[in-house]
Image (cartoon, rainbow, N blue to C red; front, side, top):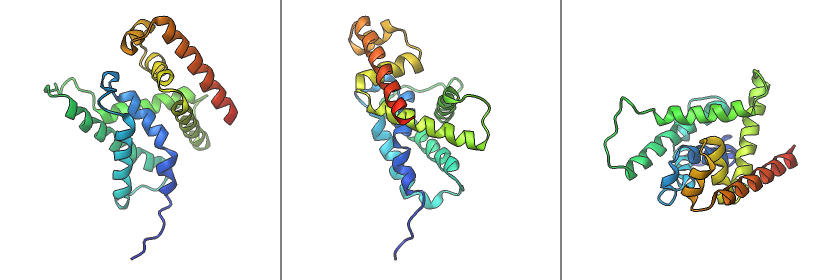
Length: 188
């Protein structure tokens, strides 16, 4: 039996980089060699595709929130596979909350004021363009930018983590920001 084309199909590819960006933000950088954010996103998108009949929302924003919840659950499951210690649930911040907060911080970072519905759509589009531009950067530049500007790590800590000198990390940050600005300026 043939199924009708799902109008949400383009969303799977359109928001992939955005979801990778969120996954990268919430993965402990020390797990880089063991777990790739893109693997968790791929699993999430496959799960969303397989369960698309279960989605009960009406629009793009609701669909994205639904997929972000899946991503948060999949990140938590992946992290559990790498940690054997019991967690103190009283001190644990739910990962779904963290992913939602990152999405909100990213959107707030891009916002100019209190958004109305058209501004909210534009803000989400800017977040997607930023995520796409970050994905095009070399891995070292992207990692340095995220660690410094998103996680607030100082240069010395990033240098130690990346096995580079502070001057090299400063260069990565400078070149990464320049390339990011150029890419975003190209798109207007």
